[in-house]
Length: 414
Image (cartoon, rainbow, N blue to C red; front, side, top):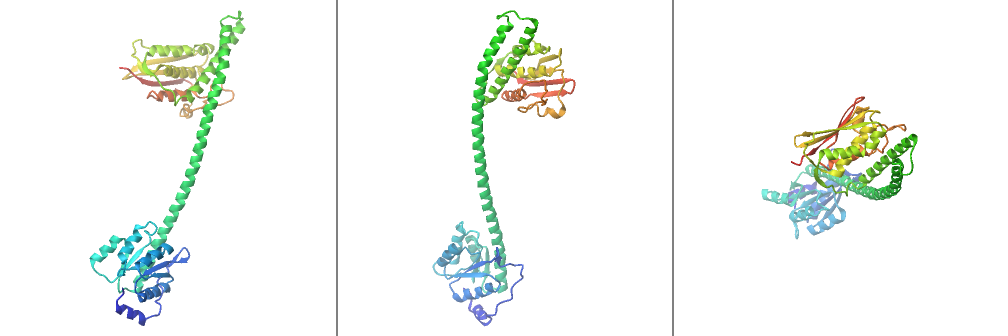
């Protein structure tokens, strides 16, 4: 409560005090800031209200702690001026309850008290009070403190509004992303089904085509003339290329489901098998493929089928970009704890600006409609993925006009 001397002075000087500096705004979002004055002495409420209203504040009041809590819940004032010495609930307990409630925790509370001990201030601070004013106080100090806390409340309200807007935007964006993810998952499912169906529908007739081309090429269906033999060779080459393309598509579809069978693999044998798999393509393009591998190279740890496909893709790529009567070399040499595999051609080479893209899916170094190298641009991308499954990495060295070398290392079994 206020002391009697203060009450007498206020009774003798009822004229409003001059407003403070206009920069200390009593407005919040264009409306008067609302101040709750809590005191069990009506005269004290009347005096404080007089000072605050003179500076443009809206004032509401409560005469005890229980009433104050009910008013706060209903009106959400901007600042609370709270007397300590009240019946039932004292100011400290009211402050504790306000600061414990998430709905009112950020409302500034000023403790108004005639208590002057350090322990009283400690008790108020522990209850969560934002400021203290000791009775009797100067009205200028009162209004200044209130306006300062109104600014704090304004900033806090703005921050909470920003947070709410951000939460709404995040929720909306999350919903959009979840919807987009669901669409992508559905598209991925449809893509997998489409690839599975297409690859199946391509494989069945392709087997018949290759079978009859093989019979014709072997002369089982009659003797061929030289021109017919050349035509059948072209057809076999095209059928083999189509088969490799279908297999590439299947490999990409099954990449996440396929389990590799790691074992000891003979370097010379797997290189020989890879060279044999491209023999028809090399013969058709009049390219010679040579193997340079020491006979005593130790075996490597690898999935045999996968390693053969990696080498086959690198050879297929090298043959396509080699000149007629050119040479492609398969090189295997021992390195510390590894064997390095390399496929070298002496063709056109790769322009520096294209090197960083050649392992991208569907990338074509020669994207023109007249490009002479076939394929869908899956081969090198598949090589990259398959070698990553072997804890390895494919690298390339190339010089325009002088050819390219693709190489990778695999661990030894010893």
